[in-house]
Image (cartoon, rainbow, N blue to C red; front, top):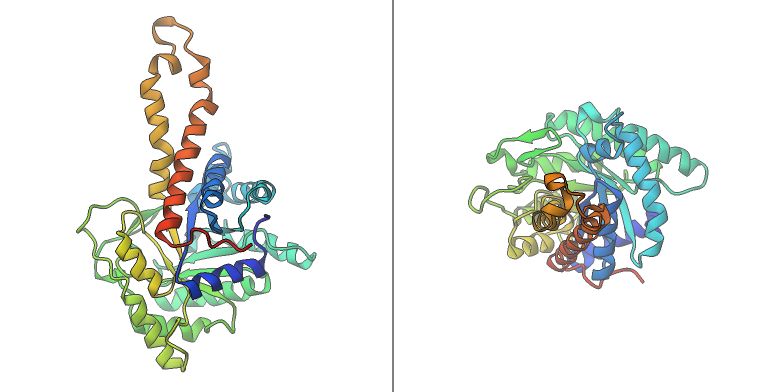
Length: 343
């Protein structure tokens, strides 16, 4: 199937919310990690989301120029071609983009999609994320309003992060403290500024103790039940049904979470969960194993010629793809999206 159309992407999110499951959103940084994500979705018979962060896009743009837009566009165009061979629907998304990178990343990508839509085509990306968590909520929402107007016109869904996720990702960092919990007032102010769908669809990355990266149990207290409070508080304020809730939530910093924490989040409106740290490790682990097992083949030790069969990138690249794909399958199982693909 091709990359999801705007209509199919909306259907995917509606199905997830109604069925209380979520799509893994897998960060990719190469054609190979893209294939690993697509393969994992196909093997799990799950639709899914592939996303590119600012750092990932810069890496994809090549180390000579490190151009984020070039990198993101190149992989997106590649994905539009190769995704045809996988029997699932996949949406393309750009991950965390702070204020100082909007003009060098999201806004140029939006302009490309705007031109495509004017020409009668579908947008290049299906959703973009604005990460204003380092700004005041007022400034954050003001920028979100501007972006939402543009994404709506371009048939794109906006993701907004209104309060911080702890840890560090691509240069955006926040301390692990009590600010990692979104309040009902934060949620109400968001609904007042962005509406509840009538101004354009958006995904909400609310904070319930989330932290990017790797952390040991006990360092952070996740409170996914907080999402229910946010939905109920906004529903009461605006006269909406409390179930399934007015917001489509995103779970950030999910690596290392327990299945119970994940399932509580799903019950309370999470439709997308970002996965990066775990899939990075899954990709790299078999590469390290291959190198250690075949060091005298991948290196020209003591003047020998080495073994081309083991230093050929394909020999270890295939192992890396398979391992990462297996981790994506596991994520689909945790998020209850296995077997839910749109036929």
